[in-house]
Image 1 (cartoon, helix red, strand yellow):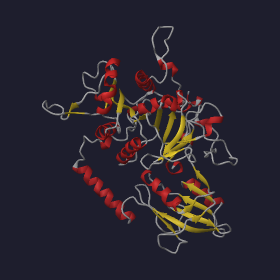
Image 2 (image 1 turned 90 degrees about the horizontal axis):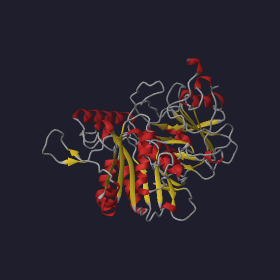
Image 3 (image 1 turned 90 degrees about the vertical axis):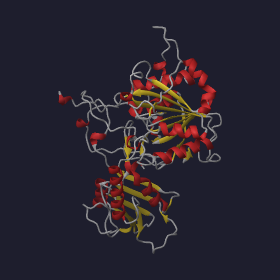
Image 4 (image 1 turned 60 degrees about the horizontal axis):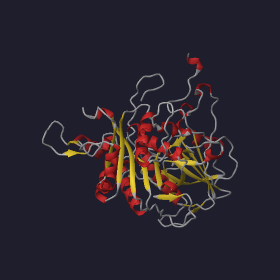
Length: 271
Length: 220
């Protein structure tokens, strides 16, 4: 499924030993995908390949991270892989929804690719419907995390230090008191499936998600990417001199493809 | 999703999985509906489900044939592009029909006949008589999302792809074009192009700017 850009150089199987794979789930508000766009755009990551798959709706366009005339004519499709070796980071961006009944095969192929390319761990950015929160979740931070048991051993302590909140399990049958608690991520797309599969396959995976609703999800993307940055430290959060706070929002570069997200200009004749 | 005017429009969920949540069991009605659709698709296509068949009329039959040698392949997708080819390029003297795609989906059905009316849904392949390596495809039917990959594999699978140049012609509504000014004042129709980096020739029109994208079979 993975096709490297540089077909001439060696075998097709990439070696991401020790790398972190960062990827989005196609979820409510597309927050994960928007956050990934910010990461790729800000870190100026290089495309190293794409996924040739029949599981995603096809689309194509010109380079969404173009900054000038010269780099604007590279084609871009629905599932592409970027890398930044200096930070041992490889990023998958997914740009279209799953074709009906194809999300399971995609998850299986993806996880076996994770294993064969020897990624050390996977970080999945996702979101969940804000309207499904219970009374307690309505208060406090809208950000949550999840760790597979293998990753819990490695970084669980760090999450405690960061004062992060783990995603709560909910009753399998709401209203009935004596029931099992299960993981429920409404609007999260393949998040739950990937997480539970990773748990059973011994893959180190972290899920970072935000409660949100459909609308202008750009602020949600910034919140999520800053949350990610607290842990992975992808960019330095400079201390702002005006209010002495560390808010790295201004250091994320918005890609050129985010223009016109809410439609074209209006015809003057309308008024 | 809130639009420009502030009213809230229910956006189709982009999660793409809501109907397949594991926690929710398929109700008996859902199962029945799914079974009926599968039965109908099987009856219609007569080859088991959402399969598409590519029938090459120049082949004498059998499965293992050598690939079609092709140097130029022009694909016209959609009624407008197909009509363009019919009006300006195709005629019965210079071009011969060499294949047809048979498919069924909820939007259209094509048959294996090569004698079609302009108002039919069809997908035909032609070859230039004077240079049999030049192929043309007129695809006026809609190829559904879950059939696009199959279409690609079956059509291109029959071709020898070395030194092959592919040109795809299609149309999109002007209203879908994203631009700073309003599309009302835009001079239309207009041409835009996308090309791979392997395409070295001059393109006859400007390239498609971000954030515009292409979908469906042309994208596939």
